[in-house]
Image (cartoon, rainbow, N blue to C red; front, side, top):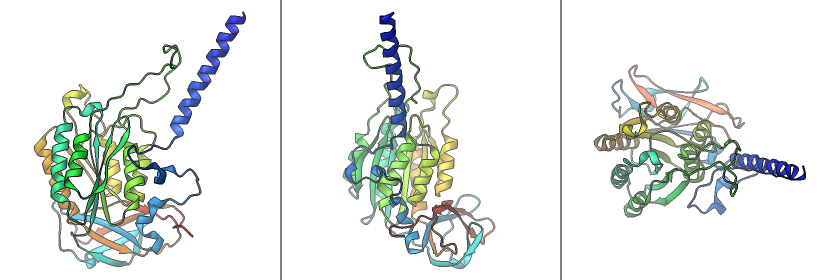
Length: 355
């Protein structure tokens, strides 16, 4: 009887340890491996600390800035429009356009996020080659880029640089890292304990959050990130809405190049495209499906390059000056009836430090 009681107590202790460990892991904010975490915004544990990622929206100086493209009904870019060609609304209320430009030569900050999970085994070499060529062609002396890989971890392979050599080396260093998970208690041979932890394999949402919050939020000007992925997340601590909010707060456009070797997914295929469309539509980018075709991948990068170099820039002082942290919907309406605007959905009115 005494032995049974001891075994029962041990099982209870182990069960409690398992669930406490799982709960603690679920509550942790993801970290960006390869970055100096002593200065990382993701380290902020004080809920009252100011959200530094909102500073680049320039709301703290009463100006909201918006970069966008205008296209015709066939998707062709429309150049040479002027301020008088647009109406601007925030939460449905007309706004006065204070600043306007159609410059394509403004400094650009880019993040390349490359999926290195097991599902990308056959397409990763193609992504590296075409991605490196894209960066070499698009980056000008005043531009910068960084490279992140994501699989069971999120790794900063190269921080901000203008070096073509460094960026190419970073992309080439990405390696497939597939999950190896078990749900048993270490040293106990598994046992009958339930596996409640979400399997880790493709931390896509965590990667977008970290690229936005830890990298792009600290920069100013035109910012974009390009994801090379099949769009399927597995095991992120954060959700899609967290990734989208972080990208919006950092004023970053998100493009997704949907890359996948369809033969590796079986009869059902892959299903990450709907989530990726939500992310890109909210941030002013778009999804381009590439499959495993290298020519299509090159064409997709060319399209993104053309859009980033053909952006309009609008700035305005909101009539609603209250910085209450709420999301404000912004609409740019071109007067041409067949024109379509590709822009982020809005911004967060977060107060700056000292308010």
